[in-house]
Structure formats: C-alpha cells, structure tokens
Image: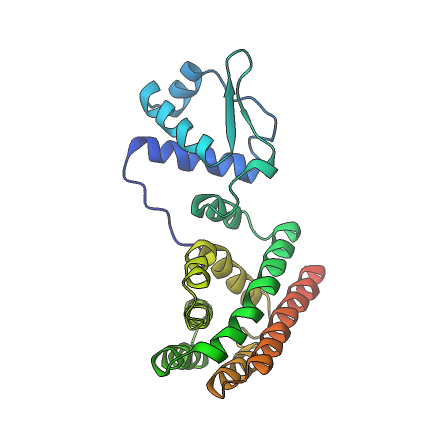
Length: 235
C-alpha cells in the first residue's frame, strides 16, 4: 500500500500539493505555472517557501525555470521516476493501464532474478523471514493484512539475495510494489488467489533450487498481470 507522506514544513506541503497536481495531470506537461507572486498567494505561502518547494520539484525533474518563459512542467522523460515522492504521486492516481503495465515490466526484470539469487544465497535467518511473511499471508483476514504480508514476502526475498544493491532497490520501489500488490489482490475474486504461487517460490528457495525459484516467480508475475488485465476489462 502507499505509505502516507509525512510533511513537517510549509515548503514540504507545497511540494506535495504541486507534485500531486503535476504527476496526476492537473497541471499538464508543457504547461506554465502561474507567476511566483500569484502562485504564492494562491497557495497561501510566502514566496520564500514557494521558492524552496520549486527547488525540490526541479531536482525531481518535474519542472524547469527559464528567465523569459517562466516555470513549466517538463516532459515525463525527465522526471525522476524512481524518486519516492514521484512514485507515491503516481501510485495515488492508480490504476492506470499504462502505469500498471510498466510496473509489471519492472517486476519481470527484477523479481525472478531475485528469487533465483535468494535460492542460492539465503541463510537460515533470511529463509525464516520469508516463511513468516508467507504464514502471515495465509492467515490474513482482510485485504490490508494480506497486502502488508505480501509486501513483506517480496522484501524478504530481495534481502535474501545478499546483494546490497538488490536489497537497496526495494526501498526505492516499495511504494510501487505495495500499490501493485494491493491493486492485484483487490480486483481478484479472492485476495488469496496467489498464495500457491508464493508457496512454490518459498519451497524453491528453501530447497536451494534457483531455476525453480526463478520460474515460479515468473509464473507469479505473469498470473498477476493476467488477473489485472482480465478484471480491468470486466470493469
């Protein structure tokens, strides 16, 4: 699930409000933002706070400022798509077919390889974390509990690779994966529908069978994609 963004200062609130509008399409790509004094007045903040917010949004690749043309929204190709805030703003506007497809492609690249690596590299403590997450999924009484346990399962697999780069990747994509898992489960007839796939991944990692783990994860991702496509068409 999407974690709530904690905002502790005024310019952070401006970043969140403008960021959501830009990523959600309320302020379109190529569109110019109002002049600084007008925007500050509209958002009821000082021009100093607004400038600080603009620096943050610029660093995320969402906007650019030019002397004669003012501040405008940049093309999406320049956005820092793996920035935690940008991902959260995109996930907040889910489901969109385009974004869901991109999330699936990301999973196809990362997760089968991670499952195979986990089967080779995991230690007993890491295996136990995967097992605990699986048991939590099996015991989940509602969608929220299921989604939380599902995310914990995939985090445990990534961390079991003992590859610090792979493990660090989870913190970057956590928001997107959490939203994806919740979406996939929420539109299925039974949110536990993918539990058998998770069991196959767990068993392969337990038995140290890298290729079996890879194929099981590939099947899980493919099945999730089919589930979303099938139920999206029905909607």
